[in-house]
Length: 306
Image 1 (cartoon, rainbow, N blue to C red):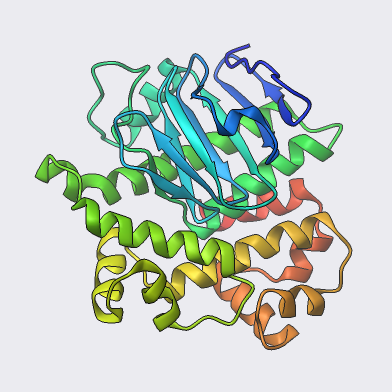
Image 2 (cartoon, rainbow, N blue to C red; image 1 turned 30 degrees about the horizontal axis):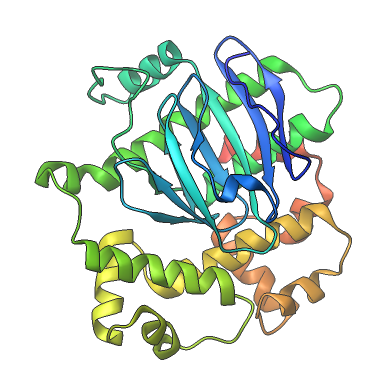
């Protein structure tokens, strides 16, 4: 296997669900009572892309701390050390894609990116944006592997080959201004942004005001709106909406609760308000997502974005 995780306690579940010469795909669940919250952790032998399902604060070695949420993808180099802090009471819930360095090299070449000196350590940033269509596609890809007994491995790897260049292009473009400056953004401003993400992760099911968010971040409303947009590329409202609909995806896929109940739980005023927002974000409806098998749904997504 390209990526091996040692199970330390019953409060941890780490499992490889797909293994190939280029790619491993797995899930990771770390409950709130795990000892991993108080110890240094280290990734496996190859670079990784991690898609959070819950919010968790991640402290990668030699990098600013970041509140990892479903709105982002996390990047890890080989054997990368990091620590985590609890935010969501469900713990750390995520899926990971571990990629062979030579495979990653081909992808970087295909998008015209500068190749790193060390392909085992290709990332000089901890996280990047995860567009809505990429989020839904990788979520559906993982669900295909997890639930479809007769899925085709060729289909899985080819689907990932379509997703990874888009993901890397967006991340590199997002970090390009900071790379040109050859320095990280101001730490105080970063703290304000991460405070917003932390507050939204904890309170996204509540009725929120911009003043409440600014009070939590300990800065003025005007300053916060300006800095958040500058450092994340999106408004606070957009981040909150994306967080809510992406969290709702899990409920749509994993339980039988009525869509109206899910809508109200995530602070949408009605089923129609939720459906319209969901369609605007993902270009599909909650009902279609729930009732379409994952292979067919993924094919539709890839065809739309080819």
